[in-house]
Length: 103
Image 1: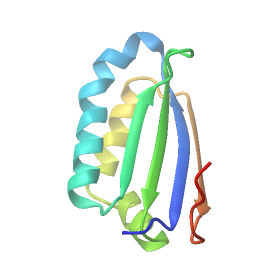
Image 2: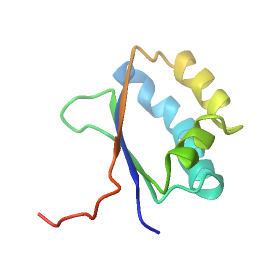
Image 3: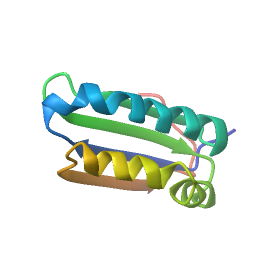
């Protein structure tokens, strides 16, 4: 399946809350892969900026991304993110419909 949409983003939490947040983040990723039609959905804490969670996502269409944002597992994830101190959210999406070039 060819990716048409790429998403990059960050969420910031108090570093001391990351360990408690991880089970909820794991559920988000698992549910997204199982139900939302993503091609890739990668999440990791930045090793040089504790408390900063980085996301990179590939989607087959804008519609599939829009459906993901309305999926049943998103609202509970957002509630947990607030509970554990979400202080910053930045996401941007790109149309990457043209052929990818290796660099």
